[in-house]
Picture (cartoon, rainbow, N blue to C red):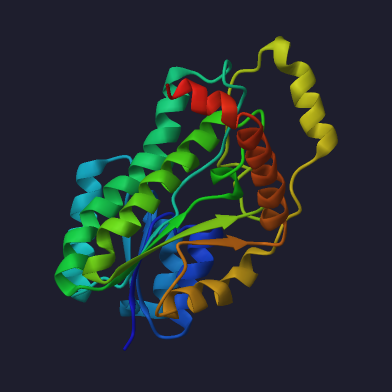
Length: 270
């Protein structure tokens, strides 16, 4: 049976490729974007198999209304992908209140609202797969994008708890943690805080170090289809080669630190 997908941030990047992959194999897709005109090519190509809807995920009421419309249109929801998000570049001191709130509203709370809106329908049908697009930045953190990390660490936390809450209803949760990919994450969709001279050396170090090796976004099409077809999908999965290396290094550092300070920790417990 054809699956019904609901994908936020479908105009480009992962969301666009995954919508195309689903449609190409005969599934149905509710594709959302802040500007639904960006989805016109998909509508021309796939007709009634796609329902393009305007959505700004920071609007909780709109999230609930859009999920309801999607369910009414296709009669069910099988795959809900929270993909909408962007990068906020700036040291913690540099980020403005508005920028911080907008980052959390989009990357974290937007995913929460869409998830909450979808859950009653998934519970009723006792099936479904919620996919949260996190990042390697959801388990490690680098200077200069602290609020982005905050949004992804928060996404990972509530999603891990969610997985345990909804498993009795036959609902699966998967957190995708991509490394660097050739999306527009660091391009026109990114937001940059006003720079303070005090952090000039940090920015220079970042430029000298360069970015992460970039994977090819089209290659994730096969991966996403395999993931949604898996009867027992994983809670977490990396996309790309580099994340496992970074995770090994960071967790080794953490374990070494925690073990070294275990006597201190025990004494602190009284």
